[in-house]
Length: 634
Image (cartoon, rainbow, N blue to C red; front, side, top):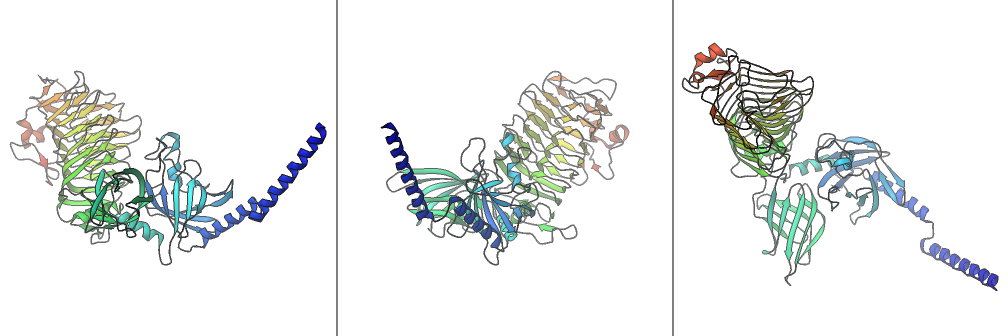
């Protein structure tokens, strides 16, 4: 009996299975693998048949909190057979707006997978395991190089999702006559938010129905209350377009969709053309860059005479610029750009009322100076604040991150600070230097410098094993301070570290004002500390502060705690107070306090001629009897 039941069960199962197979055949007419092969063939044809290429809205992923995408970037891809050419609106592994070719493929793996398994510095920049700005541990920036093809969009595009980090991408076909690099160039030229946040009212038919915020890096937050009093709020990423912004996905306001918004630079608002919803700016919004007259070359530099001209430096970071007028930012938003690798000649003009107060890490006229950057004759006035914990703050640049950078004959009266900087680098001219052959010469600082672990009147800290850094013929007439525990504060430089064969030189400089370190760290007239610096020379400098206040062992006039550092022919004021006690001077100028000079002597040309003949009062310095020297170009 049991055997009969068992045989009947097998027969029934076979009948059901045959029925299922028959049903599948009736629905699809072909196997799943065959359907996948056809889909992949279709996607290949789509990608390669568009002669103008594709615009990509690329959204990276928050690998820290595993939340939704946080930043949108515009890219351009063009497929040709088995190769693909890529470019991005922002610097990746190569400069912005630069094309790089590599290989691509679509493979079968539980669906169609678009893969870029051979290195391309554009797409792989976002998924390098480490070593790029913004990377987090071994996750890099949360990017992907393999993407699941999710399907098509209504306008003939493709939806993709990253295979590992779920990065979102939308591929949009360029229309006939459109050029991908031109598209990216227009994106770069859009007024954008690189620091802080800007507020808007959401208006429908002239009525305010909600509020929105565009915030750095590229996040759109909104709050909307419907007619029933129900409140909806959300935050999502966006990308810039040539005419405005495009959201990661559409949102609903009063039953109307907001997705792609066009910027009106005169009215200072965004409008969604399909719904008529308006985002009216209630704050200052960055002025749209305007290319100045000129060619941007050494022979014909761009001639900068307005804020809009100045903003253009963020669009073209490699050109040559020349100030032909003072620029008053007058409360306009300044977005520090970088890495700047071009040249800026200031002709002794001033950029005044610069006002930066942000949580962004790198701040100054430029966030970062790259290789071969050259800045001369620029003066800065205003206020520069980074509230980042690991801040890089300076009037000219937060960070020198390229070799062979020169800053010459520049001046600063802006206050520079990093009030929350537990590991910050803050300098009157530059915050941090970590590349070779940097020269800062003929510069002054008259702005208060405060906060951070490494705080200096001219430079916060240079640090690298093989760097050559020279600070010469500079002065700081300002108060320098830090409240961070075990910080290093100096009248010229906060801290120098040289673990190898580099050469650091501070020469022919002086500092006045005060140096205060309430965190029980170094407070020094010239250099807070020089560590392991066999090739460091501190010579021909004068510390003229009225008072230094810090730890008992590292409050000295010339150089704080040091190893293997050469100091010679340095001087300090006989009226200087060290933690409230009048300074004493040794017999030799090689000591940490240097030799004695009275403030009255340091205000005479005769004293420099006798004691510091290396100071050039023909070409570099000038002095009016009874005053400390100033630079001849001032």
